[in-house]
Image (cartoon, rainbow, N blue to C red):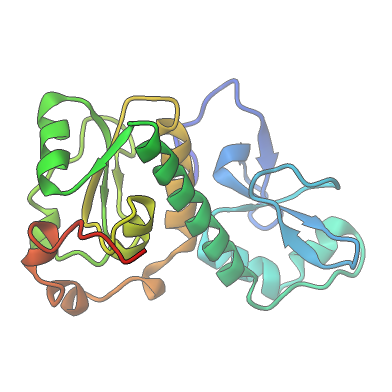
Length: 224
C-alpha cells in the first residue's frame, strides 16, 4: 500500500517525492516540470517535455514543496512557483476526474441516481461507488461500496458529479466494470489527497443538504 492508500503494482515504474524522499508508483504522485519561462507547471498527464519533479499527492506535502523551495532544489536552479499551485492542481485533478466519469457514462460504464446505483450494487455490476462529498451522511449511509480496495469515491461535490452525468446535481453514482475503472480510482485517490478537509463541507453543511438530494432531487437535468 502506497501513500494515499493506493495499491502498489510491482510492475509499475516508481519515482521519488522531492519533499518526503519516499518512492512510490508514478500514478500516485504529481508530476511537475519547469516551463520555458522558468515557472513550475503541473503535468498531471505526464506528457510534457522536461525533467519531471514528483510530489506526493497530499495537500500538506505540496504546500510544503511550494513554501520551502523544494522545486528549486530539485531543478538545481531558481524557478518561479505560483503561490496558488495547490489550488491549481486541485482544479486540474477535479477536471480530469470529472471528464473520466463522463467518458465512462458515455461508454455505458457508469450510472447515476439512487435507484440505478443501488441496482448496480445489488447485481454486482458496480466496481466503484461514487458519492457526493456534500451529500448528507444519512443519504450516503444508505449504500455500501462494492468489495475491493479503494472502491468508495467521495472527493467530488454534487455539482461536479452532475457535470459528468449532464445533470444539475448527482449524489449517488456507480462505475461498472470496464477499462476506465482503474483510471477513475487512481485519479480519485490523487484528488482525495489534494482536496483536504479545509475544502470539504462541515457535518452541519452536509446535513443541511437534505435527504431529497439522494432521491427525488437527484439527477435533474440542467439547462442547456
